[in-house]
Image (cartoon, rainbow, N blue to C red; front, side, top):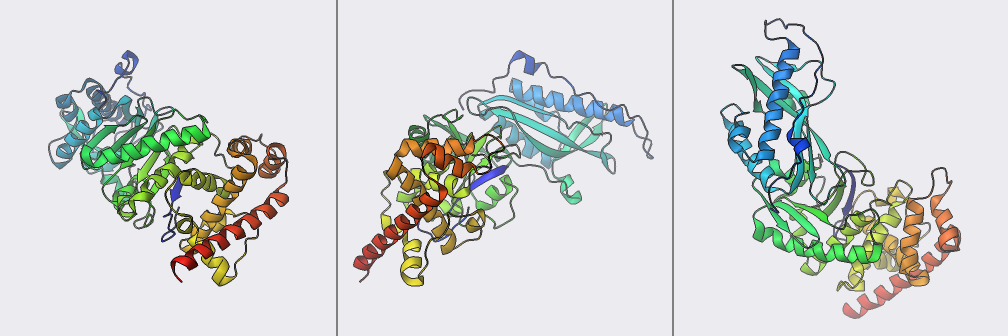
Amino acid sequence: MAGIAGLRRPDGATSRPGRGPVRLGAALLAVVIVAVAARCAIDSSGSQPEAKVQAAVAATLAARTAAVAAHNKAAYLATDVDGTFKAADAQVFDNLTTLPLDSWTVTLAAGQSTARKLDSARLYQVTESYEVSGVDYKPVTDTRYLTFVERGDRWLLSSGSDGAAAGLHSDTQIWDQGAVSVVHGSRSLVLGLGGEQRLKPFADLADHAATKAASVWGAAGWKGTVVVVVPVTQAQVETLLNSAPGSLTGVVAITAGEGGQALTAAPASRVLVNPDAFNGEAPDAWQFFFDHELTHVATRAWTTPAVPLWLSEGAADYTGYLSSSISIDRRFEELASAVSKDGWRPQELPTTDDFAGSGDSVSRTYQISNLACAVIAQKYGQAKLVAFYKAVGTDPAGTADPVDHAFRTVLDTTTADFTAKWRAFVLNEARTVTAILAKKHP
């Protein structure tokens, strides 16, 4: 996945970023075996010509695709050799046929002239493609490295992990990690582990957040429904995102683009919950996290590289705090401390580098970004904040400074004038919070 938008805790303690069977049209059921390169060299062991092996492998993958479409578990498992891989693959089949998919296919990746040879086995790069019904914008593709062995006149699957030894790491999906349950909300689809009872509260949070995000941000190229992925451990989330172990410590929720693309251009958006961090949060903050992440989903079509992080993250926090029960002193405690105790003063609107790292300084960066969006909403109206965001994100290529251009055309001001107003607003909020904290803790 790419295009990740992570969310830290609002208290600043840590900062970082079946609805039925698979429904396939007749055209998808008529699986076309991918043409392979006409390479007929015979390897030194005297095995079959490479083109013939690839044709057999492609036929196995085609049978696998058709079996999922037909919900034929026996036919699916007939593409595996007996053993531990087949046993685990049975769970994958059950998961795939539980998910509300418009399509699921698996084919040899294009452009392979030969395979890696593992003794008598062959390791091929394979492309998996799928589309969640009613949610995804187009099919999502990922990469797998699968091992095939010859059995009679067929080449069957024997492993999905052999590529790791050669540095070839397969992408992982939630259906690879255990028994998947599916919970349908009014505006959400929750895919996760641990059973429906565990997942239902996440659907409720996501439904509320989706409704709120739509009311503030409108359509913005979003279908109005969100897929939420809920593993049972942080390590599983890191595997799904191809992230280093421990890299998501303290990250409660993440919005990511599927298919290795930036969020704006991704074929699908996912909100992933890190249960290790989520479970450590106060219950009144849970809705905030979902409201924040659904803002990223709702504004996906506008969140181009022209949009600075202070605007995208500030807008998400702004939405998250609307009608929130989280008190102002909890929202801005790090900011107030920096101003009152350290003499810190805001200078320029936050840069990308200001969001790097962790701790109080990054929490303060989120807080002053939130206040930048709050200034726009309070002074010009919430509709102008939405229009400003859209103008920045959709500014024609070649504009020297899309942010300043939007300040001038949407808000009838300049970056310099707005920054001066924002500085004063930040300091006023910091002083207000300092006074509240002084009364609470004399």
